Amino acid sequence: MFANPSLDETIKRLRAFKRAGADVLFAPGLPDLGAVRAVCKVLSKPVNFMVGIKGKSFSVVELATAGVTRISLATSLYRAAMTRFLEAASEVKNSGQFDFVDRCASTAELLKLMRI
Image (cartoon, rainbow, N blue to C red; front, top):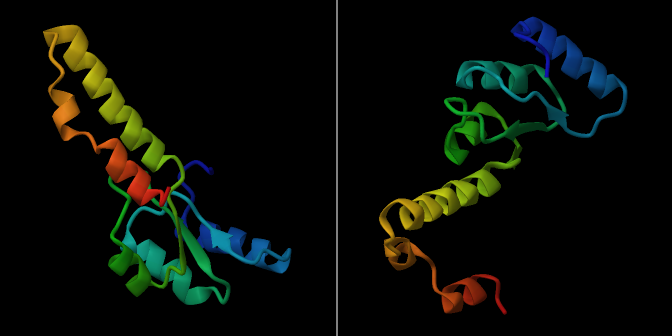
């Protein structure tokens, strides 16, 4: 990532990637939906948005309306799972309780989700 790039610099860089043959353009860390919209508006290639930066993740509808055509989750699902893991481990360590089990998906639910 580039340290605090201006929107103009970001667009210039994305246009250079397009000229170099990129099929999808990617600018992680855009500050708000206005910037996402501005980037999508001036580029003729599909724009990818990376979910997972606190305070800079928007809904699918918001992103689609802004012009985003591809959404990446990056490590956000992994971090969500690890957050719950750490909460469960902390519960066992600090209180000796296993209440987290009641909030877990059952094996049958997981297998159904994975269609096994």
